[in-house]
Image (cartoon, rainbow, N blue to C red):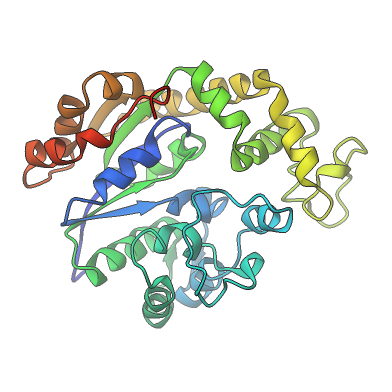
Length: 314
């Protein structure tokens, strides 16, 4: 993979703080690949220190993500899914490869064709760490699509900030925040974050992740209705009725990110807040474009700033 090394940037955030908007705006810059939800679609792999062959890595990239499959099963797929109704897995979304529904579908109108190109090349990757595989896959996507850089953004990536900072020391890091009350309210209405909160609470209370139960592991009776094969849409929605749960989640995720940034300060760091972006979209986007090494950051900011709207006005 040494023939091509893209400029690499990563947006770290708790989620529900305008990060999807940023990714969509970044996608309009013609030399930039906006990789959405890649690292978190790979989780818990994104935290793994394993060394794997190319075929072993591809086997997981091409497999379904259990959390997304569960949301499809109960009829609550996240709205970020952009997979076309004519796609190969449209009739069986629970088996859709994890990289397809958002990451590839946000890059092209024919994500299946792009998936097939990856299927030909990724198994040839050398035996290396999972982090190196992730880097090489994103570099490959940038090369295939004729881009010079990639910017990865996953909602909730604060959880894996230590991994990201440790393994991508040369990446340009954007840390995006939003006030916890508004983030928590938005999380409480979003099925993916309802699942995230459930898992964090279960690990904290019982030391059990309902989506990672080992063979023979004891599952408390209180947690059993929330196992992937049992949970229902009503049960999950009910967890969104207590916004306090999500304030705790914001506090936990923020502490993860901020501790990681303090322990391992990145070489290139830009700190942004959603509130500042709403107040001064042109200025804040120009800062971002300059930091991400865009060719014309001011021109890009001017061209997309009108898409930044206050949630109250949207």
